[in-house]
Image 1 (cartoon, rainbow, N blue to C red):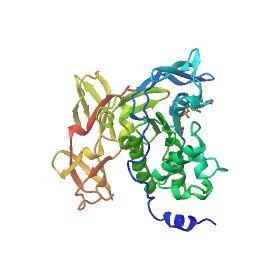
Image 2 (tube, protein in one colour; image 1 turned 60 degrees about the horizontal axis):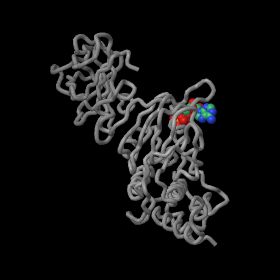
Image 3 (cartoon, rainbow, N blue to C red; image 1 turned 90 degrees about the horizontal axis):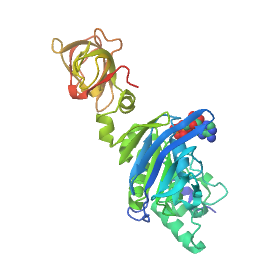
Image 4 (tube, rainbow, N blue to C red; image 1 turned 135 degrees about the horizontal axis):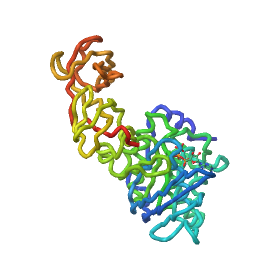
Length: 374
Ligand SMILES: Nc1ncnc2c1ncn2[C@@H]1O[C@H](COP(=O)(O)OP(=O)(O)OP(=O)(O)O)[C@@H](O)[C@H]1O
């Protein structure tokens, strides 16, 4: 009889309880280097000269839209795909490249997939023991129990994956990936199958576990907020290339181009014209240092709008207002601008549709790009 089942039933109605912090086994983190990686499928270069070094213990998020090559890069690191050109090095030793290939199971790399890839015919404990090939059966059992305990699922060790909730399966997959104490951990969209309420809690605890293990980690995601929450460094990809890399602040505040800017903020975009380092557009004139004369896109963060009484600053008319809790989302028509400006503002409770207002735009929330920017 399954003694854990009734208790698990209750788990569905509360956030999962994890094991004690600080009890995940420590790894010896490795350095992972991609050198000029090219991956060609047919006529298409899915990865186009990707070079990247991830330092021991660093947590890097590969961020990009679907199909930009993130998973392919992980698969190349893991050794389940061989690059068309370039090399992968682990602690300076070639793992993939001309004249040398280290088998996936000898790379010291742990993997965790979006669908968790648990073996349905194996118990939770057997799943976690699967990668512990270098240990005796009793040592592997102890290591598996320890990993399961850290993710709070020790009591489900003898159950089968299909009896667990999605969140519990995610934790089994996490336990399986950390149990061998890999030097490098590769996680492909590890939270995307969880609902939003669950995702934040699971993500925070997973990050705590990553820090405890100390493993060098790559997390693939297409969610910029998730990347900002997790990463020491974000690597933004587009169409098989790295567009920009840096801290969350660097990517958010100083995006390399319009593509990178749009990834991190739902800007108001207003067409303009650059002359002598200043961009003019219907909502104002803004600094555009170093940009060539010509057409521009003026990007204004929604939180950069302050609403004033009519007659002050830029004239506008309220189109609609939505209460979002901490802020209100207000749409405002401005003469000469095709689409209403979107403002995330406080204290707009008294505003009515059709009301005239003044709009003050904070220059620190404005970025200007040449309209020809990729
Ligand atoms: N074995 C393969 N044969 C042919 N094309 C492939 C193969 N593997 C991947 N691709 C193509 O390579 C491109 C990049 O795929 P990849 O899975 O790396 O992207 P991704 O950024 O991880 O996207 P997603 O977030 O949707 O998983 C896609 O266009 C995909 O169809």
